Image (cartoon, rainbow, N blue to C red; front, side, top):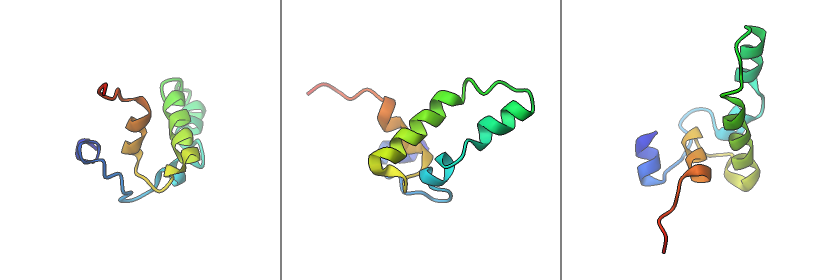
Length: 73
């Protein structure tokens, strides 16, 4: 992921962000197993937002674009 973030190349290698965000599998499995999904929930929301913004074909690492600080001009 670090290389993707450094280069800005978020091409999906396996499952695209759209595929990963299509269903809250991790959250559901966590809840069924009695494990809190509260740490994953905000990440899942960021994944969905990134897809809604048109980056569904990207890899998960592209979520960083929503939270990283940009240098001031």
